[in-house]
Amino acid sequence: MSQPTVTAQPSGFATLLRARTPAQWYCLVVGGLLAVRGATTLLFGASFDQPGTGWRAIQQLAVAALLLAAQRSRSVAYRALLPVGVIYLVLWIVGVVNGHEAFGLIPIDARDMIIHPVYAVLAAAILVREARRPADRAD
Image (cartoon, rainbow, N blue to C red; front, side, top):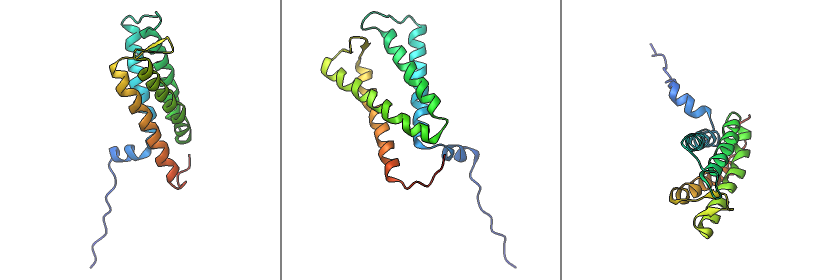
């Protein structure tokens, strides 16, 4: 008498993790972080001087809106990574060169000097990873 084969079903959490691509997770997590940071900056007295934290909050909210809208679709999420990665790479480079602000509007602080290249490198890594994978997923 043979024993029936039992296959383990993935848990709900594991299924949730696999249901999204790395680009969708990037859009969701980074978009969420930027939305929270931008909103709290505006709520707690942002300045719209030049450069001012209000301008940075507006930039963060705009990028957050793009990322959070893009996270719903696999293909759109991957397309959103390139401009976001470039934006944060440029902000980081301008911050390194200038030291304290970008384009006369957006203040750059020590936290930005760490997080901007992290956002850019993560976006690039996900794009490179996806470019090397065979096209086995449909949207």
